[in-house]
Length: 343
Ligand SMILES: [Zn+2]
Image: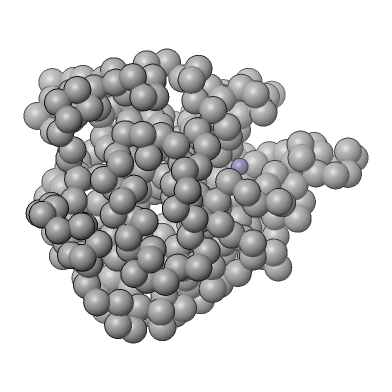
């Protein structure tokens, strides 16, 4: 994640959105954002006669289920951090990639990968990046894409100790949190198979950009957007920085601008699920893995905590994260999968 996105080619927040990249292969399913906005149409929650959250399932034991999901996700967060920093090219990165694949295969997902070479301006050599995809539920187009980045930042420019700013961060919140949540959801699908297609995408190379150079981020999601799978999801939800002990979960400005009904839906779900860590106020304009998806016309939103005080420092460690907060994010994402909002 980084701030601002006005310098991204083809992306004009609030003025009609992305100019979608069209190909013959994807033309039938790619929805241009510009058309969506200009027509006043919204490709979102189905059957919106009532306020959307009234269509949500009863909260019931959601809190307990969310706690269990949060605990499982936190176990995966710690397991990733045990590999050390997972910046591309490191041994921790290689081992973590194996770990993610193994968990997904064990969970019964149809797993595939996208591997490519990437030269980040701030790194001396090209690095090999791998997006990891796992499909669950009905094998058809539609449903939801859940995305998180699994790489961690190769440096810590915000660390208070100048001597350690060149060292890679551990990325418990920035990398392992969203990845851990998606892995826990994958495991939950064994007992509760999703009724809609669920495509989990673990993006690599999200965090290889220098501060102030927003075009250097998002290598994995840019590659994914240029190589979309055959079965296109209806909606993408990116989760990032979703486990901090001080988490304030929010939607970024781009999400609110392009998908106001999804903003309303999620605000309502958060109220209904009594998510104390959720803030319904508008967040800032952020660069994250939803941006390249928007640029090719795939509706994509971002759930994020942009206030983490340990962001891009060496205090981004498991002891500064919370299973309870991770579980709150999990309950919200679970509700989006199961609430009947997507086909
Ligand atoms: Zn980051």
